[in-house]
Image 1 (cartoon, rainbow, N blue to C red):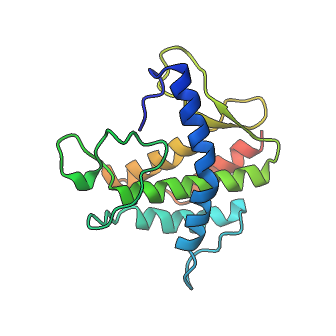
Image 2 (image 1 turned 135 degrees about the horizontal axis):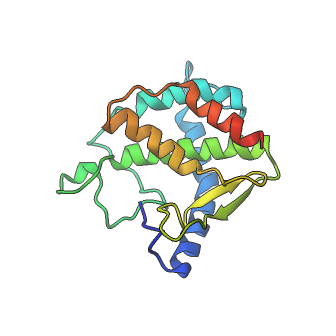
Length: 180
């Protein structure tokens, strides 16, 4: 990922705008990816998140080293992906990063449909906070919701740390965030 905490203001704005431009195409790719019979239904509802998240958590465990995909706007292309085999690469392949990108775009779509008043903001917290400069979804007056980080962290827990991730955890986070 890009280090937005230490990036210039101009770079942070550039990354924010690129992220926002990438949401709709990622949502469209996700709809194509989940168009097979038996795939979860993408109806943009919070209720759909449990089935979609179960599907996601299964698929993110499949690295698919032989396939490649375009890197998401939030991934620093100077950082090699897992399929490169270079020291310090990974932990995800470009295909896994594309899947994470599409999943977070769907979650963003669900949240903005549930809360049309939500706005995308560049997070500004304490000067040493690692999330500074990240694009987050502001809902109400509380702390912005880190859509991308929530999905990326879920993928890290499942794939890298091999921890069981409760499927309902994501929908509960989203419900709490949109209730503000």
